[in-house]
Amino acid sequence: MRYDKAVDKRVAERRADMTGNEEESSTKGLHVCPAKHAGWLTISLRKAINNPTRILRGLAKTGYTVVDLGCGPGYFSLPLAEMVGGTGQVIAVDLQAEMLERLRVRAEAAGLASRIRLHQCAADSLGLEASADLALAFWMLHEVPDKERFLKEVYAILNDDGRFLLVEPWGHVSAVEYRRSVAKATAAGLKPLKRVRVGFSRATLFERGDVMMAEVPEHGGGGLQ
Ligand SMILES: C[S@@+](CC[C@H](N)C(=O)[O-])C[C@H]1O[C@@H](n2cnc3c(N)ncnc32)[C@H](O)[C@@H]1O
Image 1: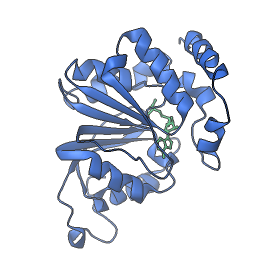
Image 2: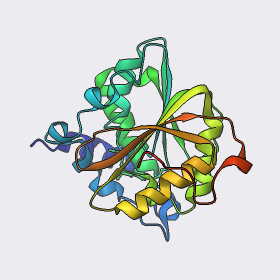
Image 3: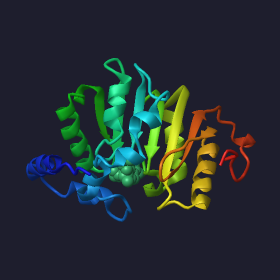
């Protein structure tokens, strides 16, 4: 297991130049993964459980625009940038400035910074305009306070053929809670296509469907779960 202390050090150096208490105010009252623990999300051992290339193979293609929601330090953003190539783009979204800073340091070191656009959002709004081929929400939806609103925004940033991969951790999200989230995604217009096998996780692939709210059952579809 390798924990990258060099990223911690460079982020700390850049932080020293920052003023104010921006980080604390962006997460106040929220249960989010603290940026100071972010190094654990990129340890090499994680590849044995969540191999990004294997999970995203066939979903992220050359030239695609992919939105990595709640990107953290970019465990998925960097492999995604490789997969979309020089003609594609990754939009990495997080509410914590320090997570984005960690990602920036790692992307620069990997020579991938030009393919990754960083976007700091608010807890209650993505504030993002995009026409994405793929959106990924990996181990983050359970941290979002208003899931209905968030999932409607996910629907809005996808293009007509866009797909959405939702992955939640077993440890933090019960089967019942997960089914509720799938139902909320369905109500937002995202059609569940299939369950996906991801280590220590519950995962569903959705496609953007036509929003016909009248047809959505009161408790959502979520039929594949
Ligand atoms: C457990 S980490 C997962 C990071 C990354 N997806 C991964 O798998 O390595 C959850 C991330 O979601 C972010 N997050 C939480 N709530 C959010 C929200 N409402 N909007 C955007 N990002 C959010 C946190 O700041 C944190 O970086």
